[in-house]
Length: 152
Image 1 (cartoon, rainbow, N blue to C red):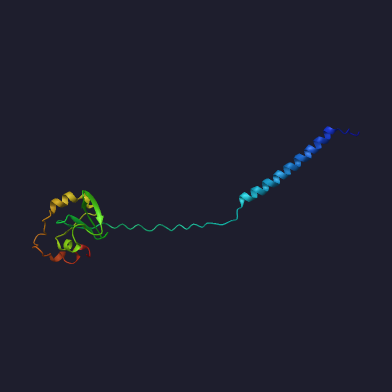
Image 2: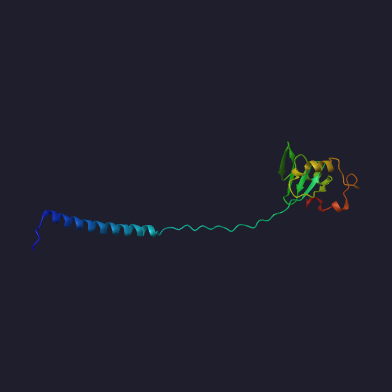
């Protein structure tokens, strides 16, 4: 009726107790580490992203000075011309003062893209010695006075 006690049985019980203890210890550690990973309390970095600014498209408007082959964009307040075969944009024309340029004959252009796209045609229509019809040397037409240079 009584079971005999053997050393093998004893080892089995200890082994089982050891397994249960190890299992509980592992479960406790796993729960602890899992809790740490799931919740981190530390410095926070708030990032503010400004909304994009509205895009305003302004069409270029050009005045051409045939004597100097220079274009002026009043919307950009820049001069465009060829320099060594390349088109350049600068706040001041090269080789001529703004006053001399403004006193020379000029013509408003009807295109709103790059002067480089139209320059060959413009030079044929308005050669260096071009003057508006009815204009004498040093005189401006009535409709050209004041606003002909986009405020300059």
